[in-house]
Image (cartoon, rainbow, N blue to C red; front, side, top):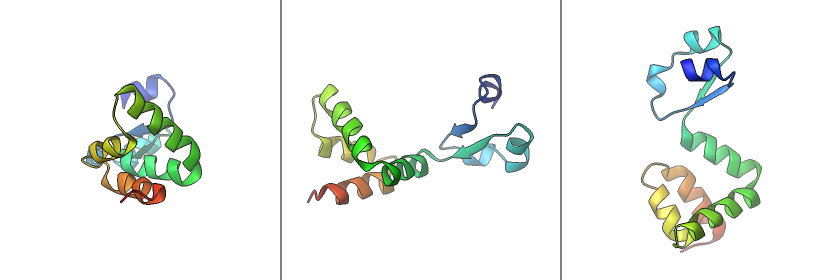
Length: 90
């Protein structure tokens, strides 16, 4: 939280939501989001851009976008599944 305050960020992305109570966040004008919720929202807002970035990440790792989504599915299952379905992957 200190880094977010110092950098004047408005959002903290974390898997550890329980350690960021709303009462404390509001004191500093901060919001918190789980990475899966954030990524899913970004995909819903700008699917073409998210798919483009996923393709770039996959290419840089020398894997397919499907393999990248499988890897992401371990920590971001809803996001991965949503993108997978949108791409029409089996």
